[in-house]
Image 1: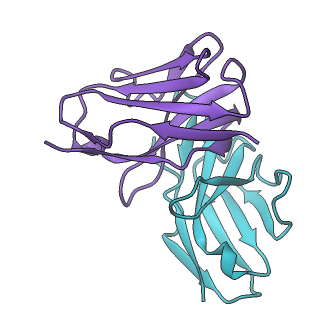
Image 2: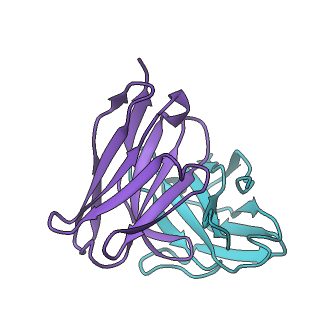
Length: 117
Length: 111
């Protein structure tokens, strides 16, 4: 059974960098595609991007200039960094396994990140 | 690109059927049969319940079914049960760099 768990700071100051890690069990991050999705309070979900293979990543164009995703296959983890955050980046952040064409078959429970001074 | 459109809420009585529409455009739902649906109980991990419009993953109840007409995909839940009370989200593949669009979510209340 594949399980994903997000971890990272719950509070980030404006203009700083949001950093989250997703730890995977039951599958290898050297296989498949690994994605980040967020949901601001009271709003719908937004796909942020995905990472795969040896660290190749593809990002949502709306965030491309601020986001970086990476893989650490030795720890079976993948990570998200979002720089220059504002209060608009306050959201529940989810990691998920992306099978194909928008099909996310395993998700973490999510972690709430608040951007505030 | 705008998010897909879902009603904010729907409700139904136990045993009834309900349908949740997910409306996109000719650039996403209208072109691709790559619509997925997710069930989300707050505080838990979202769960994939349908993919490629009509396909159910192993272990998902037959009471969940999907369809598509033009730019609108729909999730139908038959024989409503109390445990179906949750938030439901659709998404669609799109060919541009944005890759995936999600709906705003629909809160299902079982009365």
